Image (cartoon, rainbow, N blue to C red; front, side, top):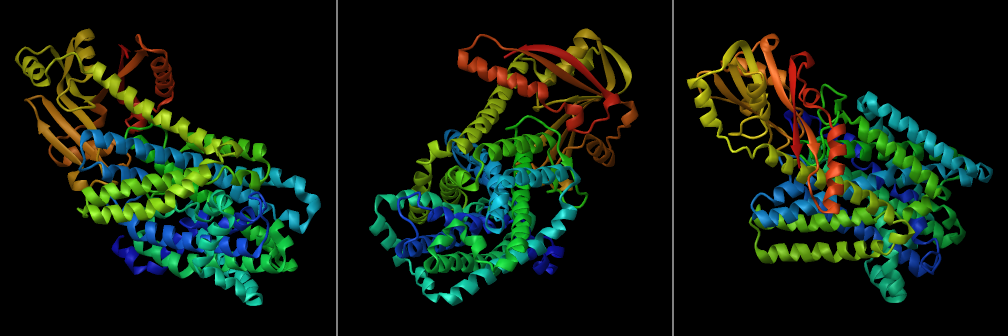
Amino acid sequence: MSADNKQSLPAITLAAIGVVYGDIGTSPLYTLRECLSGQFGFGVERDAVFGFLSLIFWLLVLVVSVKYLTFVMRADNAGEGGILTLMSLAGRNTSAKMTSVLVIMGLIGGSFFYGEVVITPAISVMSAIEGLEIAAPSLDAYIVPLSIVVLTLLFMIQKHGTGMVGKLFAPVMLLWFLVLAVLGARSIIANPEVLQALNPAWAVHFFLEYKTVSFFALGAVVLSITGVEALYADMGHFGKLPIRIAWFIVVLPSLVLNYFGQGALLLKTPEAIKNPFFLLAPDWALIPLMILATLATVIASQAVISGVFSLTRQAVRLGYLSPMRIIHTSEMESGQIYVPAINWILYISVVIVIVSFEHSSNLAAAYGIAVTGTMVLTSILLCTVARKNWSWSRIGVLLMGVGFLCIDIPLFSANAVKIFSGGWLPLTLALVMFVIMTTWKSERFRLLRRMHEHGNSLEAMIASLEKSPPVRVPGTAVYMSRALNVIPFAMLHNLKHNKVLHERVVLLTLRTEDAPYVHNVKRVSIEQLSPTFWRVVASYGWRETPNVEEVFRRCGLEGLSCRMMETSFFMSHESLIIGKRPWYLRLRGKLFLALQRNALRAPDQFEIPPNRVIELGTQVEI
């Protein structure tokens, strides 16, 4: 955090409540209803209510407070968090083989997030609007259309940025948590015996009494901690301290009071299981509560949409997704971005999900498998970081790993059995994203290897050109080079076909560092390779957008001045042909061709003036 941030800790803590805790904060809308709806063979029985409440309370304490806020948030990369950051940290001090395994685990975790992010807006908004069933049962048919209208508006405003809307997030979510606490406390005061469920013995008793069924019931309990990954992923926006303060002072007490308030209501009025959240409120407050719940779920949806934009940018910059248009919606905050392609793919997916599943209870079966899968992977990656980066003892790492996995694996297993009742949806979406990311990375590597296998030495070629130069023309030529010490393809083709060379040649490499930001002092390095050849390496973090004009402005400050109107940028445009391969690799090649065709072109990606770009085509067999 910056010095300014430290001076306004209350303001940042309030903002964290608005963004970080939207998803987990709207879980009381549906969690207890799904736990006790009768799908597991038992209804609203006293032992079941106490057992579920105890499990929910201790999950919030052990998973959120202990695992994520205490341990996982220690693993940061210059203050940034998220599953891909954890993957990057875990792979720093390991062997190449181990790094490959960790990369696959990180990509699976990132893919799970894409699967989860389609369900979150759908289940959250639908469960809020389902308050209509209580207020006016005749309006039941309008729940799906209204949900689609609300989410359409949400996705349409994304292009305008979340800065203005974001200012409303914090006060609305603070009001939401206060209402959760008041509704819950009011019910607990009327039936205080429910507080017995704070005793973990009730959770143990639940397993002993319901035996096998209790294992399957864990799949519903996990709904109480969906959104836990947001604490870690949003760490770079708010810092660790505000996120921790917000949880312990506002969010955790409000959630516990509300869950226990719903439990107290159910002990007294079992038929309230139809919708225990909305039935906590007095009749006069039902419509205002539904409006507040809808606003809160829109904010929760916004948080995961922003999260998937950030994850997409990180994946693009690290080379796991094809370049795509990323629009910065704020001049002050680098984290506020808009990715049109992802926004509309996500919107179409969410609408299809709402129309297909029709009720939040049907979606609840699909929710959880992606969350718990990511939790398992996070535990394994964290243990690797603790051992390799923090130099923890094997005993310490083992104790931590066993402790976390004893919670994560049963939760994941309980959700895995829901594959046929809806769990297939996030798994399918995650599989699609995993295939796309691994295809782009591996096929791109194959393409670059094919382009660089001509075997010519850069130093030898420069020496030859200086000794017996071709026709030299005025101005500066910039050749984009993806790797150091490799002759750019565009330069070979320019010499081969045009047989000319500019009087000054710059080989430009844009490099993504394993850090969110690169200090401006380290941004550009310049090396003179010969009297007329220069190498420029510009380094960027994965949260930054490369800008060629800015690179050359910095070069000018360091003695290599280039006037943009006298500079030509030479780039190669590859026409790809798929060579002989097995059928499954041919399919992967065709997917890569489709991704390549739709990828953002380099001039747009690096903000190069289009009238200064010369593209030289070449055909490459991969």
